[in-house]
Length: 290
Length: 326
Image (tube, rainbow over all chains, first blue to last red; front, side):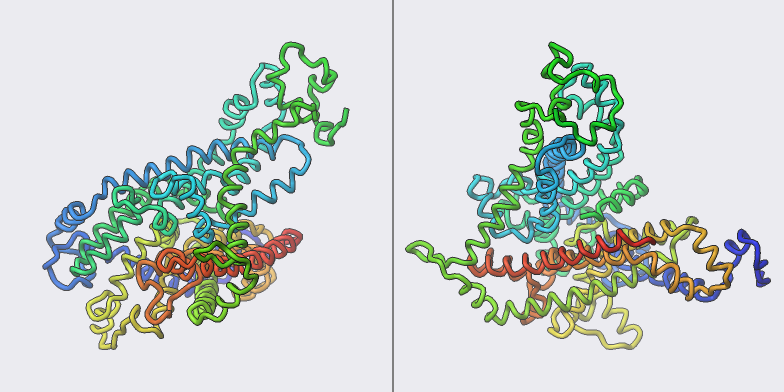
């Protein structure tokens, strides 16, 4: 085991060498310990959510002997989670649907058309990466109110309907499409929209999926902007519902109920991640350009 | 007709046909090709494609910047508005709560960015490569990225709870004293920082993992053959190769430190005694709770100035690192 690797042969050196060194092994042990710390809040959430409220201290990390759904029932009864869920789905869907249209049209223009001021306009798009709507909440709230969209879901959606990140991603993807295909389609008599829809988009599915995952994740988790725009309890998305639910359950020391509610809200994206791990990871890497 | 350099690269039959007589009867379908050639009516095509995006950008990105600049330079009274120049900004800078927010945000940025990056790099170094255990551990570190910041705040509300909370309860079992983590002005910002590091380190880990994979195997093998130990390899091979990743992830982390305050809204509302007041929370408070539009606008202008400075630095760094030979 501890025999040194033959010094002049690359392969064994690469496989056996690092494995027996002390520092990397120590590092791996530390990181494994760190992973336990990282998992602790989730572990507590699961334990507390499935434990009966009267069964021992709330901070116990021991799995309950008799798991119960009582906390979920109470969470379900005290907040309208199905409605919040529907609002969040509408919000994410409404944002993504428009974004896909605006980003693929603009992405095509930047990828395939020559026009004066192209790089200037592209730079103007990229400004949006820095000016996230949350920072511009004061003037954007005025605009939303002036458009009659205060306290509506479209009011939450509208600032996101143009997307610099999506445009950038689609431009990169469209550039990879062979131009011969486009010219063939043009001869067949396709208009630009049909060209994008039937030639470009089918060939750039990975970019579409990557953008969709990033868009849905970020808007599923968004809080501050909807908090400002939405006033009616019936129009709250999940994050707003969870926040008000948490603050009211905190008053009654309902920690198991809070854990159950948090679990319910986090479950859809966590499940999606566990099923499509690789796609999620690749999409988030693509999102790094923002 | 003007020939763009890109068009020269095309080797298609269409190229041979003079544009004016190209495919009679198919003028409409050939719009894209014609626009590339700069036909007068078709020059509007790019505008048409960009218009949907530009409308929303104008409404929610450019106009608000103009509006916030105007608001910051005017005082609104019942009798209308009046130009006051830098008065709002100087009043803002004289506000102790704002100065505190500026200081807090600086501390919070340093406290989140540095540990997050160091941890993310360490985790990536340890978990790079194949194997089910490594994949599982990577997933553990990535899970906090996927839950809403509000959900993370809901969990940490109990973690930080004095007395019976997760941390205090187990500290007491070990015979250690607990603390009022979110209620003590000396500890609250640190508690918020811990939550942020927990939430974001896994996201930054992804970029370091990708950066590690981009290091050619031969470089590593050469270092191994030269008898370089693990720390030497880290210092002379791995870290130099990851320099662009560092610059890039650092900027994302800095932007996050300014633009994400959901946990502050849920956990502390800026308190106790302004200890966790961050810039964006200050803006939110002025606008939504105190209805002071001028003050909120001035604070937004200052924050935007900081953000632009950060982005300018990041762009310069990105340019330099893209010239890096790696």
